[in-house]
Length: 418
Image 1: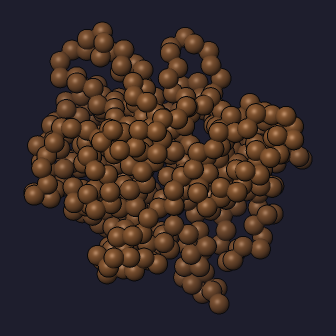
Image 2: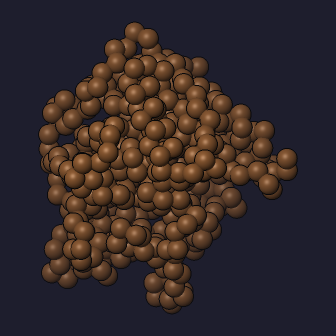
Image 3: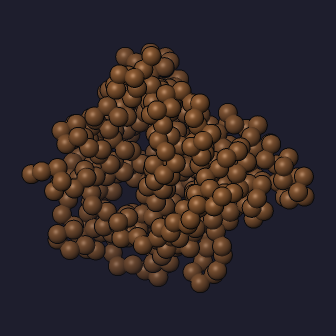
């Protein structure tokens, strides 16, 4: 079969509730073996077909649900540790960006609902409320019709319950041609006790609550999108107010400032920089995969491109079925729309760019605008690699979180590196 007639490899990994103590070592103990195996198998497919395998990792959590306080710190620690583990396992197994065995990993968040029998009115209300991302029910995931060719699960009691329920819901909702899927059970740590107890903020000791917002901004270069970018974008999406009742007209927007090409001309290995449209497309692909879990992405008639503006540059808008509007704006300075759009009320940034948030609020104060609520995202932790638990040093871990390093490897591969 030719590559042209072969659909892009797309796999799903189901993870039941995480351990009560969310650390890199505890997550690795629970899921490391299974995640490592699925990454290696997906990378093998990528290498064989010279393409990128999509791996959606759907994990159950009660953090961030509308019925719970929005525990931002606990939620970003949860996502950050899981992305750190994936990054570490990729380093250990020589799975790398742009090296012929790419795996595009995207973590999705699940709100589990007991749906063994017919939907009751209460369950149906919860299901309808979680029709759209960033947190959806297992039923919505199973019925969404994404073209996964394989679904993998953890080979223990919790994993089997989750897999069987997923398959039951999928078979009920989809016809045979769309519902057919290969299943694979992956080993877990046999010494780790299975538990139906999901992680909560109180279990982590972090019960700080934050308010969600209707207009949230984030900015960056987003060159050669990596897991650090994915964590930043995921947390931005989670800051958006999702608790909007049906029939209530509330304007909600997620504004992504993406650095214009001219500002990047002096970057190292600039010949391997992606242009603005490539970077915008990568950010859009990730955000739509995270936010629109309820139906196949290829069926979404949602992209509207606007003409280039002499002042603002390129703008691309997505109007999602949930009512959320995503704007991708070309920016030419460190402020972007945060000082031209008064309605923005929150800014998500990495901890290393904290000063940028302070500068934005100073500019807004000069205009007598309200300060932005600043949400910081921690830099992914390489502590486990540092302790020598693998054959790779911490630097190898960090290289996977560096757009400059990715460009350097591309330059070396093409023979243009110094």
